[in-house]
Length: 178
Image 1: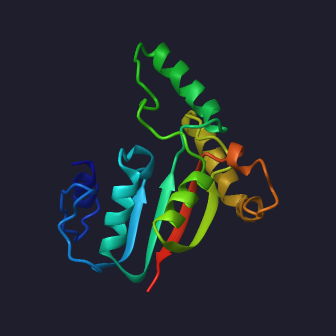
Image 2: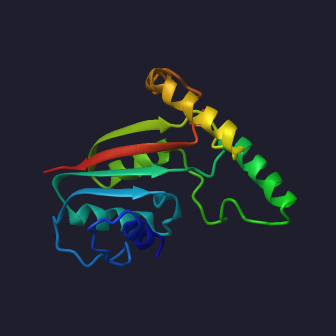
């Protein structure tokens, strides 16, 4: 429903299909690209879901996904601010559902290798917490992020150990072998 609202709002020409990721209604080798944003950490039968995604990918097809891990990282700072804001408004929300996987990128990479996917790469994203800010501060924050592109590229160097703790999310890309 949320996706359909965005499609209507942006006047996009997209057909939506609601299906179960464990048994998608598509032929084998149907897609060049499969993208999942904030989905992988919620999957209950990870191996079955990866096998199904691999089935619908064309040979040399690309799987890419973004994960916001429910592990210790800098986003906790943002979540604390959001919780305080919600308490002030007398709202309560469970920021991270209890069924979310507590995996860093390396655990996903192991599972992707076990599934036979290749050319696996990881990229750590947003080395700043997504703190809920007043409008003026949010504009300043966005400006800072845009001006920090060179830092973010350097931040992804393999030698920087703490990136998994200082990132809000990460992106993993991989391919189906031919």
